[in-house]
Length: 138
Image 1 (cartoon, one colour):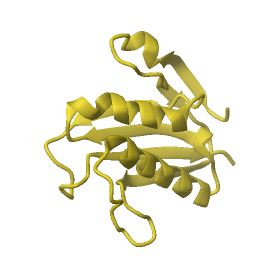
Image 2: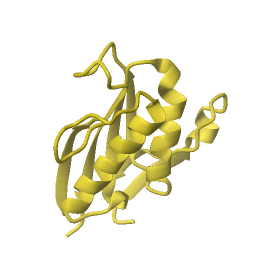
Image 3: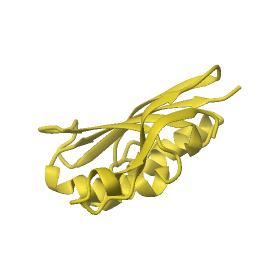
């Protein structure tokens, strides 16, 4: 791993009442490299900004995370360079589904994470939005 991850943890221990298995950490230290700030990614296509058809939080999160992965790769990196995510959901009842799905993409990565429940996102059909920051080593 290119970055130092401080106080790694897995949500199985920190949220035992929820069915989550996400590798996260309290802080990430980077040195040098190229920082990539990602716009909040939503369940839409990157090429044409068309929403996916689904209103399922799992399917929407898959699309969001696929977009994040694609953008980091287009910048010359990989998911292991992801250092921070901010997760916005419109319904707290979707939290486990969203975080479980996101966890598939960040297994072994341990980014820092902040989660918020918000009243609404920019389009009424969106249930989840995730922004991120990656640092690609020199």
